[in-house]
Structure formats: structure tokens, C-alpha cells
Length: 76
Image (cartoon, rainbow, N blue to C red; front, side, top):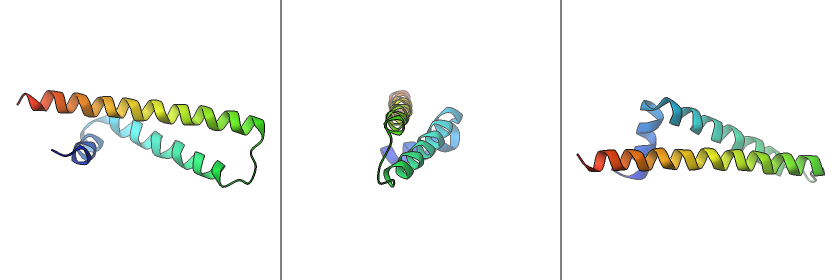
């Protein structure tokens, strides 16, 4: 099974994965909005970095869930 197929399956069957995916997409939208600004204040720069870290944490956890799925289904 291809990675993208696993991602789609987990979005449907795994609540944690679905939540992480939704949050990741939402954080990405916030970063995109910030990137459209001509200038960010120092506070906005700090906030952007925090959001990027939150987004990365979710992506890392989603990748871990994909690895777990692969591992548990490769034995079958």
C-alpha cells in the first residue's frame, strides 16, 4: 500500500490522525496568512515560529502513526 493511500485510510479510520491532519491544515492556513503580510512585527514573528513548531509536531506524530500502520500491517 502506498503512503498516500495509508494517509487517506488513517484520515477515515483513526480519530487522532484525522484531528492531527485537520489541525495541521489549519495551522498551515494561519502561516500562509502571515506570509501574505508585507511585514511582521517581532511578536508576530515569534507567534509564527510557535505555530510552525506546533505544525511540525503534528506532522511528526502523523508520520509516526503511518509508520505504526505499516509495521502492524506488514506482518500480515
